[in-house]
Length: 471
Image 1 (cartoon, helix red, strand yellow):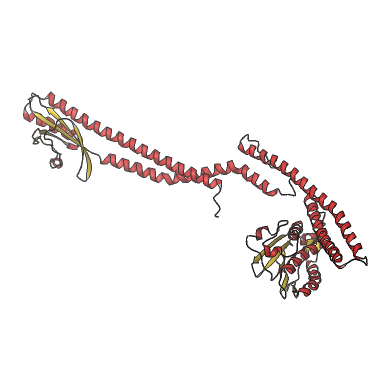
Image 2 (cartoon, rainbow, N blue to C red):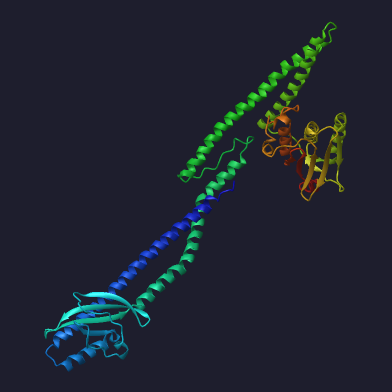
């Protein structure tokens, strides 16, 4: 499953989308308001122009035709760049415009005009708004007053407004998203600190608590709730650890007694074959149960108290060589070859506890011997890098299914039935992991079903030089 983006990223994206939507709505509203006001202003300008023309015609109603014509020419020249005409009701021109370029202007027809109206046309390569108004002359004639005004300036202003909106949008969007990301990171900073604290708390340090931000908000309540949960978990785990330790300790006595009784009974000369077989089985199962209880007690002590190990420089190559030599005897019985390659370069010492390292190596070798087929081979190698010493135990066993690998180090976990047929308690690898962790090492496994598995333990070696220098 593909991991989703962080809350900060999602909040930033949502903040940017909301801002962009708001900016678009704001721009659309402002554009509509501006367009309405400009249109309204243009309509009002043309209406006032005809109002003045009407007043002029009323004032000089008694003048001669030549005088009235001259007055109209003066009016047209002074206003609207000459875009004004006076038509008769039949559509013929009464007084043409004094501007030569306006004479051929495509005026819309004015026949049978009953009321004032506004029209929009394209002329001279630009948009024009035209007003037509019926007018009754004092002499009794029906006329139509017409005026036009270019809307190019208004359209240009609207275009510049849109250009400015779209130009500023990316800048403001990036600025708002940056501010939103900063605010979200600042708001979610306590969450990151709580997350880091939760990740650092494990079964061995349940007594630690999360930092509680005194903010009086949801984060404070979350931290307090998590701390209350940790208290309950600590109590439950302590009880479970105590029960495991007590049970392991108390059961060792009866098991020892049962084994002793069975061994004494086997020494009796009159024991029949069936009873002898039963006593041998009791002794064998008691030994297995004793080992299991010892492992459980060891893990219980590891969970409840510090190991007490004193880590000191040890020769890991020598420990591995001795362990492989001892395991080769058992391997020979199954026809399994154990080969150890210490590497071409000298392996530096690591910080460790020798008995625990022997136990770790034996668990890995025993696990490899259990699952490697007869006449197979176990390859043990040691490799040094600048910062780590790598121990690898590679077998030719049945392998581990990919879905089982993440849980292979869990306590009592047994993988598929084919692996469960092999003798074991499911605690060995858990102990190996615990030993590795006490040495600040990492243990991992790579496996392919039907081909085998490789266990790798990476021991840190960087601190050895400091210890030698201090000594």
